[in-house]
Image (tube, rainbow, N blue to C red; front, side, top):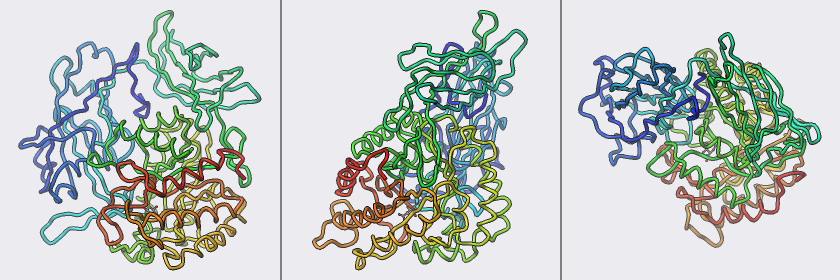
Amino acid sequence: MSVFMYPLDNEKRRVISLDGIWKFKFDTQGVGRNENWKDGLTDTIEMVVPSSYNDIFTEAAKRDFCGDVWYQTDFYIPSEFEALDTLIRFGSATHRATVFVNGVELVSHEGGFTPFGGNLNDVAKFGQKNTVVVVVNNELSKVTIPVGSVKTHDNGVKECTPAFDFFNYAGIHSSVRLVAVPKTRVNDITVVTGFEGTTGTVEYTIESALNAGQEIRVSLLNAEGEVVATADGQQGSLTVENVILWQPRKGYLYDLVATIVEGEELVDIYTLPVGVRTVKVEGTKFLINNEPFYFKGFGHHIDAHTIGRGHSDIMNLRDLECLDWIHANSLRTSHYPYPEEFMQLADRRGLVIIDEVSHVGAWNMTDVSQAGMGGSNAVPVKHFDREDVQTEGMVNHKDAITKLIARDKNHPCVVMWSLSNEPDSSQESSEAYFKEIFAFARDGLDAQDRPMTMVNFMLAAYGNCKASQFADVVCLNRYYGWYVTNGADLPNAGDQFAKELAGWATEGKPVIITEFGADTVSGFHALPSTMFTEEYYNEYLDQNFAAFDSCDAVVGEHCWNMHDFNTGQGIIRVNGNKKGAFTRDRQPKMAAHHLRARWGVVKDFNQK
Ligand code: GCB
């Protein structure tokens, strides 16, 4: 089974959760791989799966640990699973992991935000106790996705130095499950939807190795569970009369039920939620269902007190409630793929998603970072001039894109892929790099052929960016009134921003402001305002709104960030990044009320 298919429990499939408290051990000396910790851990402590391990402890050395950590638990596979294929599936482990079952290496995976797993049939004992040991590593380099480096201190302790502005949370971040599926099964499904007038279409392709006498039957059920269309075969098209479209904020879903049958016997069944909608860029418009859409929302982070980046349905739901309250219609999964369960909620709610791969912040690997982010980690070598970045880094980047699209290709909420956040696209050598990355991503990975973008950094301003030429939509992170033209010059921030936007508008593409925001400590007030106060954020927002409204090509505004979030320590971070409209515990600052007032008026469609 494609590991990217979400695990389902149904008539023919079984899912057993392995979430809970696991045994855990920091490999402080880096000896575990040589000393065969894979055979079983000793002297362990406890750890929750899923979660980041970092904020569970009270010691800095554990929070900031860089290297291997080891997990272990026991599990049973029921004897009746012997007739099936049983996988152990991890939703994600950051940034890489190797899984051992009963001492045998089962699977290794690179990339901290996408699922992986391995078939247990040859290594596990049915009806008996099995042991799984997982080593998870959080180290970063110039060629990992995301980018960073590792510094070794005089005492031998390693420190991860991310080239990105979010805490480098690590651990088993999503659920671990045993997934038992029939030997002949639906291995993968791909859907492409469309509509003409009131008639919708769902074209599907099902990957499956059928035995003689077996066939595929497909039906489409509406939200009431009534069959509205049927088809047979591995590929086909379902026609839906009086189709109800998937719309922003009205996430209507059909169920595509794919079955394999042998005569009257059911061999396998898989149900995929499907939203019928189209997405297209036309001139400076971003069309959803042929209507010009206006993005209102945020760049977000999966980030919460104590759980770090661990998956939490509670935080996801709270975030969606806050987004509804503030009249947001969209979100960017900055700066990595989000939990599968988050994407499912977005489908159901009609939350429009710009889905971002975890290629982020190569700016910090160059001398330019000195100007922007006070980057004490700067290495004065231009990132894209490095041969290893153009070779190994490119391979890893492509791999991360492949996995993101393979996992999220069927989600109606996803309307665009973001292939990078803030690379230093002012460098000459970034041009060839991104030409190849965009060509690769467009070459058949996404059957829905969604628009593709990369998110531009302010130091590659209009006229200076070598990569945005390959994008369908210009996405800009801009901080006029914060990093550029700060406090003293705030009244001019809007005009300066508008000037740059006028330049971008000549490209004839839609422009989305994917970041704008000001660090604001909740409860800080000043009259007249000063930077970091709630008053300042509101004035800053007004300057930005004026710039957006001055430019017809601007089709969206994503404030940075939805909520305060944790970062590494640094002289420009006050216990984390404080640009949230909400606090880290998801309570509104004054800025949230200000955004809400505007977004309650700005329409989802036909704004400009
Ligand atoms: C950016 C980055 C984002 C940072 C933000 C900031 O441009 O994309 O990851 O958190 O700036 O607040 O500095």
